[in-house]
Structure formats: structure tokens, C-alpha cells
Image (tube, rainbow, N blue to C red; front, side, top):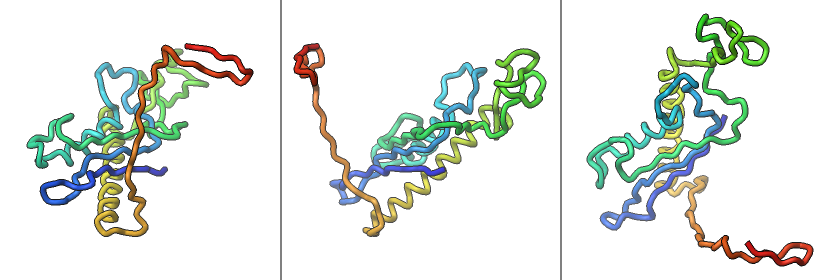
Length: 188
């Protein structure tokens, strides 16, 4: 599997002409489903934990923040999913939660109930699994983040560093004229 990461830095900081770290956006193909249906708590699952770890590190005592509390500080870390298929983080596979025996939601059940067939792993419970999978994503993202910083600081020709630009427009969709291929003109 491959993780793709965009590193965001300011063009410069007026105080000392040093680029300021703004955040990251990365994509890695693993479902945010370490916590199963028996979890009744609100959670960002493994992706949220990875984001928490990265923001905690990069928001710690920077020039505008003296705290590393979640959601505080200027640095934002977004861990997104990509090309998802059968990429469950539950590496220990499905087991019956009442007996501990292996199961398969399609061809077997747990005492007649598919709802008791739940995948888990790699941790001792779903919360530990979420932390393990989240930490692995964070560690790779941190490595890529630092590597991208070294390339940019050294003006490395192999760096894929570039500027991000955007265009934004508001369109009133309630009064839009559309010309159809058959020549008909319609309005929303």
C-alpha cells in the first residue's frame, strides 16, 4: 500500500522569512472501522487518532499556541481514505464475540446470529486496535512530512514541491439557464 501526502507550508513568515508548517492532507487505503458496531462512543477511529497524534506533535508550543490540546493550534492534519476495497484494519479476522470461534458472515454464523460475527485485531480490543492502526498511519505520515521538508529546504530537484492555487465562484443554482443538446432551453 502507498500513502500519498501533501505538505502545506506558508510561502514565508514575515518575522524571519522562515516557512511556517500549516498542515498535511494524506490518503491511505484503510477503512476507519477499527471500532465495531458495539462501540457507542463518538470517535474518529484510526484515522482520527492518526490526525490527533500529528496535530499534537506539530501544535506543541509553536509561536501561536502554547498547548497541544486536540483541535487547538494552527497545524491541521487530515487523514483521508483512498481506493478502498477490502482494506479492513481488522487484521485478526472475524470471530464470534460470544464463543471466540472463527466465523464468516456469509457462510457461517455465531449460534445462528451473524451480528455476533465481528472482525478485530491487531490489538487486544477494538480501542487498542484503533490506536495501533492510527499510530502506524501517523508514523508513516510523519516520515513523509519530514522527507518533504528536507527536499524543499535543500531545493532538491526530485522534490514534487509546487504551489497550490484555487478558483472559487458562487453560482445561483435557483435561477440557472441550461441549453440542452436537442436545442431546448430550460431553467432551474
